[in-house]
Image (cartoon, rainbow, N blue to C red):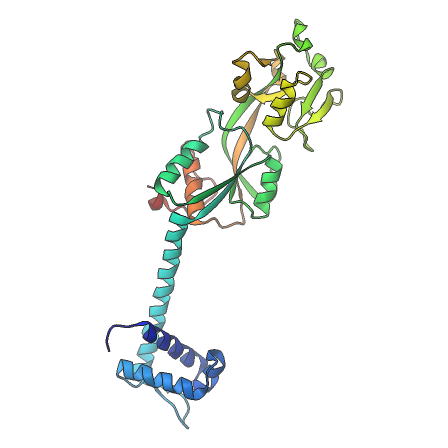
Length: 313
């Protein structure tokens, strides 16, 4: 027999089906072939191999000693081919996969956020992987994760949702801001009650986020779910509201926005998490991006992912 070719592969697959079906008659339904056609193809395989593989006739179907051995090594051949195909798929997934990541807004100016560094390092090793990004509020990102519409999210969730896994990455300090011309700045000592008498931008969610969210006496005539909209409302001059210090610096450094000198209990920190659906199996490329995100923040994976470290290094 010469080197194995595609015809031989097809004939060996047919042979395995015949053996596992118990003979030509049973195999014809699985193969969708007439029994005579199956017999002809088996004859072709025996000629190619130069040996008798089975006895067929009135005595029924029975493998010869050679047929048993050919069946066994044929099974191993196709098992190895399956492993080969799986490994090829993994390689494709690493080098040419697609990753969907959702982030909360205005993280780029946070010096403790190292997502950019993680992406840069990941792309230097996997330049053909397509990264699709979505910017949204934490609640919507969590819904996208639960619906398996994104692979991972960066959220600032205050209440963890069942089915999701949260791994801390970094935080940001948030303060109350207003325009330099806002009348609240005319007061010498600003107290919580003073804040309550002014229109405040609320975060527009069902649970308390800011130190003012739980107060019923605060005038909340505007709601937002992101920092960009909050900044617009503050810059209108009518509202005061919370912004991350790193983001507000865009305007405060130009004298266009001012941090309100309030008691310390009116300032707070927001924590950010790498958030995953704990029932979703990530692709190899997505797992490696997760590893890069943890590494960039000086952390180790806390979610038990089996990472392909060789593909990253």
